[in-house]
Image (tube, rainbow over all chains, first blue to last red; front, side):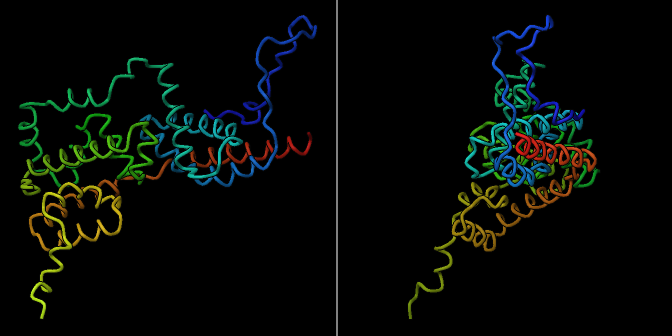
Length: 212
Length: 96
């Protein structure tokens, strides 16, 4: 749920305790956001990226409400960090913030997700005989349905890469930023994922067997 | 007459294994213009690779159409949140 932006950026009253006496605070005081050209730069550089952020957040979280919360946190962090941003490649910059915010949220909620995604992929792609059964089931379906089916069967890490590139329209570099992985890993995941989709189509008789 | 002239376009293309390696980058517009031209030339002259390209292009096209626009209400709320951040900073400046 969206929170009030003014309330989020308002500095807490760390110096005042319930007893009414003013005492020195032991906590670092959150500085109020300063008005500045930074605010205007935020609107100019980050504002146009909100839609991309929401698309990517939706791909990362697979949940509309969580995606909205994630983007809101990202905007807030971006606003606070605007002073240290040189203004170059704003999309890559906010995607990095989005990714870090997502990781932090996940770390708090689901620490078991910190596994190596490539290892997980290797485990999940080992489907064995199940593939041949699936091929028989989908043989009568249309091209779109088979692609959709193949996409859903991809390991999570690969599906995210496919969705970020093909559905959300990010470049390899932007996808790497969004996921915090090297560009080479993005390339290998997209290659393997599309190869699996293509093999699925071939299995359903909707594409020739790959010969190259 | 230079006998090599008719084959100049062949030398500028790339072999099958290179085209196959770079096919996904070509599809995603990630190749520099020279490499893209070379791959494109190969795909035109090699039926097998051209067919492969068509299959992957169809997959990519389907996935692209699959894209649903984000929830407009959520987008509106987030844009309003962004504006609020900007305006809050501005009003803070005016008062401070």
